[in-house]
Length: 223
Ligand SMILES: Cc1cc2nc3c(=O)[nH]c(=O)nc-3n(C[C@H](O)[C@H](O)[C@H](O)COP(=O)(O)O)c2cc1C
Image (cartoon, rainbow, N blue to C red; front, top):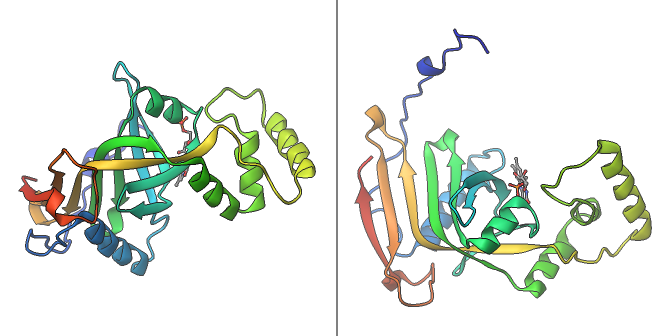
């Protein structure tokens, strides 16, 4: 990178489809699923990748991508190492924000909410569906800790792969979190930066359900 790197000149004119309160589904899960179908149809790379932002209890944020593995009435589920940086942060400060960055469609979805661990049974059920190498990988990686060398990781992988050629036990430190939304925003990029932003806001007070339209108000935000 040099002083002449043209960050400031990189500019795309967003010409996405319009989005209006009258267009969206009454409950947010159906709206998310409808956009996700569009993303799958458009064959975007890593369609279920999302950024998750977490923070320590004193408010130091950190963010990274994870993969959405389930979206249902409860919220958005992903899997990770509970002892990783994000895992520790989510346990000391159970709040998160998600961003689905669907650039090629001029769309993003932003979720803000609180987080709970999914049950051990649910994590075990999903873990069992992962390829053998990924199950071994989850077992050998002390995610986010300093590692002396690549060789050390490969040696650990090799030794566990020999020890568990078929069934791999679910590591204590590995499992899912569900992000339970208090708001979900659907953003559609439009001409001259006059984007459409339609946000579902939870009324509070009851168990959040992304399928119960009566729990949500829908409003338009300024771009
Ligand atoms: C597209 C993509 C998907 C990823 N999916 C996951 C995931 O589902 N779970 C996970 O723990 N890490 C995933 N990672 C790795 C994380 O971004 C991150 O490096 C790792 O979880 C450690 O993060 P932390 O140290 O902030 O806890 C993914 C990375 C990318 C680029």
